[in-house]
Amino acid sequence: MAASIATRCLRATRAPYSLFKLAQAAPVARPSTRFPLSAFRTFSTTPLREIRKYTKDHEWVDLSADKTSGVIGISEYAAEELGDVVYVELPEEGKAVQAGDAIGAVESVKSAADINAPIACRVTSVNMLLEEKPGTINQVPEDDSHGGGWIAKVAVDEAGVKDFENLMDAEEYKAFTGSEE
Amino acid sequence: MGNHGHRPTEWPIRSRERQMASAARTLARSRIHSLVRIPRAPPPAPLHHRRLFSAEAVAHPTNRVQIYLSRSHDPYLNLSFEHYLLQKSHPDSVVLLLYANRPCVVIGRNQNPWLEVGLGALNQPALLAPPVGRAGGVSMGDDADDADALGVQLVRRRSGGGTVFHDLGNVNYSVLCPPAAFDRDRHALMVVRALQSLGVSAARVNERHDIVLADEQDASATFKVSGSAYKLTRLRSLHHGTCLLSTPNLDSVGRFLRSPAAPYMKARGVDSVRSRIRNVGVANAAFEEAVVAEFGAMYGNVDVEIVATRDIKGIPDVMRGYEELISLDWIYTQTPQFTFSTRPTEDDPRPRPPLPDYLPKDFDLSITARHGQITEATGAGIETSALDSVYLHKVSDWRPLIGKSAGSWLNVMFGARPYDRT
Image (cartoon, rainbow over all chains, first blue to last red; front, side):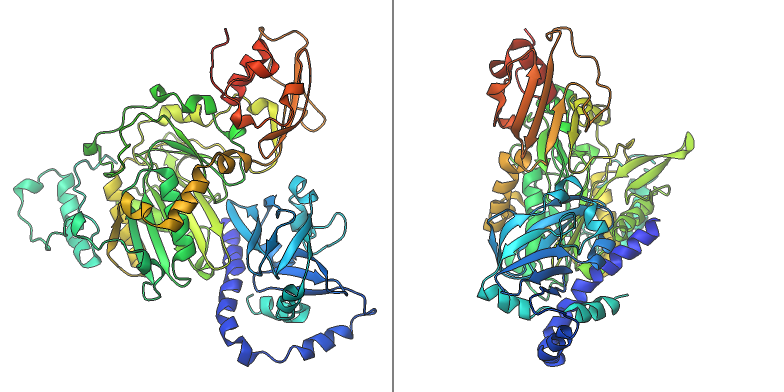
């Protein structure tokens, strides 16, 4: 048991670090964002649907079709790697943050792990359910509905939209985490 | 495993000197070292000749391996320095920091002091054993107020996990590294190797990532000697742990880590897991030296930088973190929501201990507090309206708020002064 936890932690934390290195090469190595975006649209049944993207730190963010609001959470990959979440420190409502700023934290197995803002945004509401039932993060981390494990709803401006464009879509994120297995 | 006694504080010992040191240690143990002449490596430079601390060097990319020993015994200052290193050290670097704190109770980031801590016991210096003499191997501190009878200070750290007691018979190690290298057991195992090099062969890491020693009386039981906690940020990971070496306060720790309010409280956040503890029985300097050697074996040997209190206090970023750590806001109002109820409730159906006779017969009280502030208070046999919006930590006496008998009882529950019930 101890060994398996240790292995899981190791994998969990390898990802952001190696991506930190990858990010240096990203401008050269990465294809234009046009391709993944158009590929994504073929899956979408309605243009009004929110688009979900992921950070190398394993947060996800949905951007509304009108690009003014979003929802933030942590990825299934991260939730599994962290282990049993025992407390979620929710972001402060009304707080305006830059991409990468710590907006909250999750505690699991004696570890307080920062939750970072995937994009510049202002927190408009937080998921109070997580305070009462932190385990929801382990069960449905990517569910943005009532009863889901989403963390915060945010207002987004132009800077946030720009940050959003630089994130990974689902396919890219899957490849990213897959390469860490 | 005895106390090694009079080890001089001749560390850091570089690896090439280590073999000699080991030989010297063996001889010291046999207490005949003064009779035997052994070839010696050049004696280490006195501590004050060591490399002086430089805040610029912390972040410098060439400093891939850094080792610091804090001379401060101030828990808030040491934790703030540690946090500074977490934020400022180069993302690719590996850093070891060693420090010992004067008596304090340290709660985890998401814990509840009223539930975890015997707050009323903290301000009773009489509960503390007299500090061990310097000859007992306690590393020298340079804080002016070391000798003061401060009682036990309450600290909330930034990492997760449960509540622990520190004093100068406990050495804390912390390792900062890139998240890629993070593993909850890696550096606990490093400390186990250090302990084993000191002859503590029974040390091992358990499934809770704690270091334990086998109970010689009962093979299935263990004593905890070291606990771990972690903090993960975007670029860095921190693992810090305690190591109980020679605390004279083992008998009092239970008083500090037990709250009279616990049977009445239900809290969100993180609960501590109780463990039996004991001392390892080695001197601080010997432990520090052994940990430095094992860290050096993993990452490469570098000089230890001795960091004086005034060096730490000279760093503005550290002092900003320090101001936050000592603030009552951080210590108390960071507390997750909790309820305190004198009778079983739907949410907390545990049977309650009998209430003292001096309370009114029909006495009943139920409090909900969020961020340490009462959001709801209901009761019977008392008037509760004065409790609305009260911050628990700001109340030094509950009697003016809810009357003499109930107030006296809450003073005991929440560790407010005065204690007298008259």
